[in-house]
Structure formats: C-alpha cells, structure tokens
Image (tube, rainbow, N blue to C red):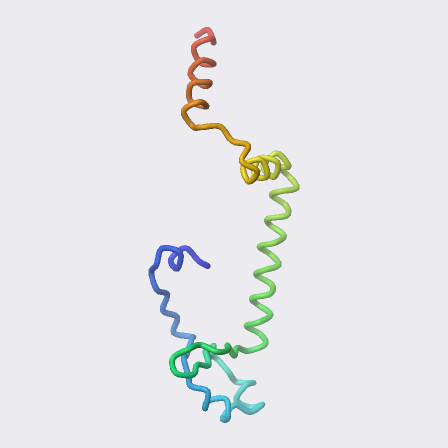
Length: 112
C-alpha cells in the first residue's frame, strides 16, 4: 500500500481499466501480447481478477525483490534495530515520560 492509499486518498491510474467479465471473451493471444493497460475484471462492480502483461508482472516481482533485499540489508547491518523491534513487539517498553526523566538526569550530571 502506498502512502496516498494509506491516507484514504484514492489513486487514479490511467493505466488501469475496469471491465466486465465479458471482456475476457475478447482476450486472445494477440490482444494479450499487446496489452498496455492493467485490466481489473469485475462482476456487478465487484473486482474478481487482474490481468496484466507478463512484463508488468516481472517488473512488480523485481521491485518486490529489491524491497526485500533492502530490508534484509538494513536488518543485517543493524541487528540492534531488529532486537529493539522484537522487544517492542513483546511489550518490553518504557513510558516516554520515564525515558525523558532519565535523559534529563543524564544531562544534568555532565559538566559543561
């Protein structure tokens, strides 16, 4: 999900075309080979399937693999981050006010 979708802002993509199920009957090898849009097949305005070119599919897979590789690299370089995320998920956290008080005490002890 991209950020605009997360904020409830609809994304209008001119390369996506919503079509009825009957469109499937017109798709043959030649038309699929020249497909330049992503088709959302729907029945009674309910999305059922997505048809896209193999090139688009492979591009999506490549982008997914790059994102996963980036995440793996970030986590490998900073194992402390992974440990901190696991601790937070397990509920091993401190209230923000407690952290602020600790920081204030630490700053007061340091000579200028």
